[in-house]
Image 1 (cartoon, chains in turn yellow, blue):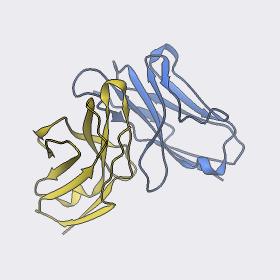
Image 2 (cartoon, chains in turn blue, red; image 1 turned 120 degrees about the vertical axis):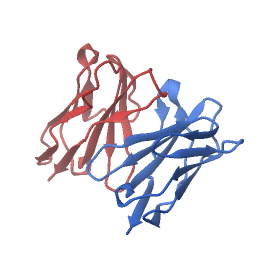
Image 3 (cartoon, chains in turn red, blue; image 1 turned 90 degrees about the vertical axis):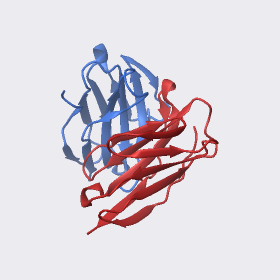
Amino acid sequence: LAKTTQPISMDSYEGQEVNITCSHNNIATNDYITWYQQFPSQGPRFIIQGYKTKVTNEVASLFIPADRKSSTLSLPRVSLSDTAVYYCLVGDTDAGKSTFGDGTTLTVKP
Amino acid sequence: EAGVVQSPRYKIIEKKQPVAFWCNPISGHNTLYWYRQNLGQGPELLIRYENEEAVDDSQLPKDRFSAERLKGVDSTLKIQPAELGDSAVYLCASSSRQGAPDTQYFGPGTRLTVL
């Protein structure tokens, strides 16, 4: 399983764009990159998933360079409610194999 | 659409006692996961089911943990006997082959405290 490395924590202010980068140097050909968000006392919630280039949904964008050894989750104009832990997962989704790391704790300040 | 349901939400027991957690996945989801999450860490997979078959239980401590998913729907995770180190949040998730690959939907978890 591909190991991921994320910053332990990040701080931001309301209205700013936040970029969280995840390193996954040994990503395999069949691996997808998935990001989850977790609030206290809740289970993780799917945010976005991609394989290559750029993916955008109503919540976030995911940027994946050509070598796929890293990925960046971009949250536009964060608010206080975006304060949470963000997990990057890399794995072969067809095999149901992907592993959570310890995530990045994002704190949005007023 | 109802989400993943787990019960109980909280459980406090003394060490050496048994405990069981119940999970009802999203209707139609064939894949069910049990995770354990320690404070300040990411979820750790314990077992994964495809329908009623446990296809990955390599991280399940089989001396004291057991799980079942009869009829491929609800699932129960049991610990017997519980140890102090088992205090954690136990998360259940489910997924379907439809939609984004391996998108897991999580329940709220059961917070276990072993005294």
